Amino acid sequence: MPRRQYDITIPDLTGKRAVVTGASDGIGLGIATRLAGAGAEVIMPVRNPRKGEAAVATIRAQHPAAKLSLEELDLSSLASVAALGEKLRADNAPIHLLVNNAGVMTPPERQTTTDGFELQFGTNHLGHFALTGHLLPLLVAGQARVTSQTSIAARSGTINWDDLNWERRYDGMASYRQSKIACGLFGLELGRRSGAAGWGITSTIAHPGVAPTSLLAARPEVGRAEDTRDVRMIRWLSARGLVVGTVDSAQLPALMAATEAEDGGFYGPRWIGNLGGPPGEQKLWAPLRRTEDAARLWTVSEELTGVTFAHP
Image (cartoon, rainbow, N blue to C red; front, side, top):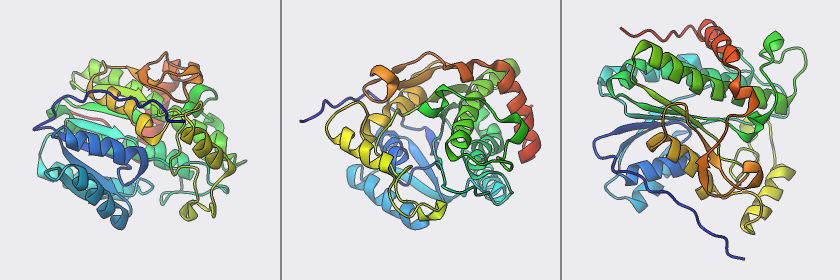
C-alpha cells in the first residue's frame, strides 16, 4: 500500500556554507540535496571520487544551480582528516553548517583504521571528532550549527572503557553501539564546551531510525560480501510502510536538527520505537545522559587523535 510521505520546511540557506560527510549516497546524499536546494553551498567530502561525482550529478539533476564541491576525505585516516581541515582553513571561508553523518556498521571481522583504531570507533567517532576540531576556527567564524548523527543502537550499552578498540574480544554490534554512543556524547559535550568558551556553536544530535540504506547491505570494503538478512527485512517493511522509515524520511531528523533545533536538541523519528515516521524532538537515551562519560570521552579523544579544541 502507498505510504504517507513526511517532510519539513528547510529555511533559505543562501550565502551559507555547509559540510556534509557521507554525502555520496543514502541519507547523506539526501541531506546534501536538501541543503543545496535551499541555497547553501555544500561541500561534500568523500572517500570514493566516482561515487562523489555521481552524487553531484544526482543533486544537479534536481537543482541545476546547486553550488557543490567535492573534497577528498577518508575518516578512517587522521592524516586525511587533517589534510581536509588544512585545505578548508586555507580557504578562510566560514562554515555555517556541519553534518557529521558518515559511518560504517558491523564489519563481520574486526578491522582497524589507518591509525590502528577499531574501524567503527575510529571512523564514526574519532574521525568526526578530529574533523570538527580541525574546522573549529571556521565553525566559530560562521557561528555554526553542528549536527552529529547517532543511531538507535545507542539506546542501550556503554563505552567499553577497558578496551575501546575491542582488541580482546570483538563484537561487531557492541562496537558499533559504542561508536554511536560516542557520537551522541560528543555532540552534546561540544555544545556544553561551546557555551562555556563562548564559541557560538550550536550543537545538536539526531538519529535516522531504521531505513533501507547501504549500512547493512553488501560492503566488500568492510568484509561483507552480500546483503545481510536484516537489510532485506528492512527493505521489505519499508516498502510496505510498516514500522521502519524510508531513506527520505530518515534524513529529516538530521535536517531538522541542523536547521532549526536549539543547542543540545535531539531529533529522530516519532513512531513507536522511534524506528520510522515523522521527525521530532526526543528524550535523551540513558547512555547519552552520562555527562561524566562525555567529559571523559572528550579527553580520551583528544589524546587518541592529537586534536585539541583550542580557540582564542
